[in-house]
Image (cartoon, rainbow, N blue to C red):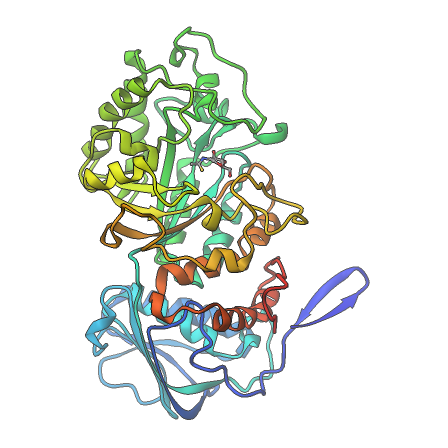
Length: 514
Ligand code: TNX
């Protein structure tokens, strides 16, 4: 990227678009198969984005692509419908894809006259559009008109995900992040074919979602955050706005209410939830493991059932995450009693239980997902969860935690699980990291971002970029196609795009930035 200093402001200028077209292999995550044709396609000013008649979901992907391309190209790019075979411009079709693409993959064909994305679903088209976007010159990310030409390398890509669950997590409890920040993060992660955003909605330091049956959770429990700032919470309308914005990017929101530990904000909001009927003060520090719901009290179960029912009603996705980590103030027997009693509340809402891997101590629940966040290569709780029938989402803290520092100079983040440079985040295999867990049990990968030290969008971006795209490649691309030496070059080529998107990223010295 070329940057120019004007006074104190850094102004991003687009790199020239007149170089050779981006290679079909220069995509993150790396596609399954790539067949270059040696030809070039030039997007004409008159191009239309054509979608199949009768599919509003495909038309929505077309509109998304048009919104992306119009500012930099200056082209009109009308979104039209076609019933026959398109002959020019860009076509997004729900027929004719190679069957291997499955439910989320796509086939991209670039000839000298036409760009075609074919998929079985709108999600597949959306992922194909993200690939198409990366194949255009980086200048396409500018929000002002650029000269072009808008050339694409000719050929065919057939691409589909390794894992069904490709996630990121944002802790909005330790520090609260408003709707606009969450939307912006959704925009950023959707570029890398992430399909799940897990929102950590409650913890000791803050409760971030309105529950009508227990209104003080938000108004009291949401009124502060780490460091004592004002905190905040989402109204149901705001939360639904996030859910819908995510859905338009083919991302499912997984809401988490962390229990039976990590509950000081709830305990501070309602004295009756405490075993001693006394509400503790709100908490703005960063310790963990000191709070617990009162397992022996009936009101605890009324509370949990009502919270989960309201959360389920806000959730079109299949999962409710019930936490279950670091319940250091809940005796082990109470933990099992509590979890065995509340898991059926989740299934009663029609949702599936997701929890941190300590949940393996409790009984199985149909379809349950255990999220592994440990730093070891075997773990009794995750093995127990799998033996009982759980599927696993891999978030090993020493590889996948986006809140760990990159190195000991990193101004933000924690280091309890280690320092995580880009290569460390990239060089592991989700299928084989854990002994005692068969690869068939792995549902996917999630990159959590805890926010004890993070207060702004710029902070979030700095910790996620470039590690989030690295982890996205683990989740999407076949292990056999992944290679650090080629990845770091593909990753470096993303830099100018992030600069033009105003993403504040860490310029790791491990990466040859373009
Ligand atoms: C551990 S990982 C936690 C969180 C902290 C995080 C900080 C997990 C399930 N629990 O409560 O925020 O470490 O890295």
